[in-house]
View (spheres, rainbow, N blue to C red):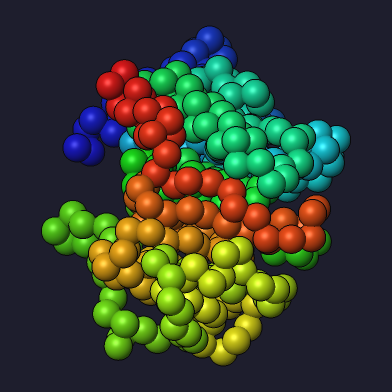
Length: 359
């Protein structure tokens, strides 16, 4: 294993600095031999040798940083931005996302060159402001899936994806449902602060148990919930409505077809807060998803109002999966009203992902 890594490292070193490395090493050897054979010894002869030695250290250091970024799997960013102007994304969000990757010691610029990844490959950018038409929501969500899987096809290895989200939470919930369990990923939350605004809230590569299971998929019994509070109300309908209220802007308006519900569950943080702590997001997602799946087992006619931060929506979707019978809804701030958005188990969305699996 160690020998294999060493071989990979020197192959990468050669690929990055081939002729420069030969030139520097040969010059250094020549100067050392000249110093040894010289009749008059001088400290000044050591200066060029020292500079060349520093140059070699630089080659090894930069190669080591790149080695950690692509071995055993390349670290590849993926950003979803829906409903925002292109200028805003490029001037602010994209710069902050790439700065975060740099802070994580990921050589993103070098990775893009090695794998020939262009901005159009790793950034899904849509200016469309979505309204009440579910077909528009379906169209954008389907395009996100197709765009993401097209990037995957270009990479020989299975990468570790770094996800950045700026989009309606229903789309990110659906993205998590179809993608979250299929690729290793790290998920970032945007904190509204000027310095280093992106916060890592989930890393799937660190969740695996000794038996190889992802701990995120382990259900929690309702009696064992520690992070969420549930308020239940009964009705005379035939469907379950689950309202996920985990932002500072709670859903207080009357729900769509509220009278058709057999039960309504309003779920929020146990402390009633919208600004979540910086830790414990994965356990919070497990509790919420466990609740959803418990009721889905009893009634496969569920509407979920997704009023959460985007990484939390992704994590919940990752656990719930692409279940038929779940409709995602949310509060549309452009229309100032609640809207049905995405049929999570739509056949067309299933087909997009099945097509990828066959390829």
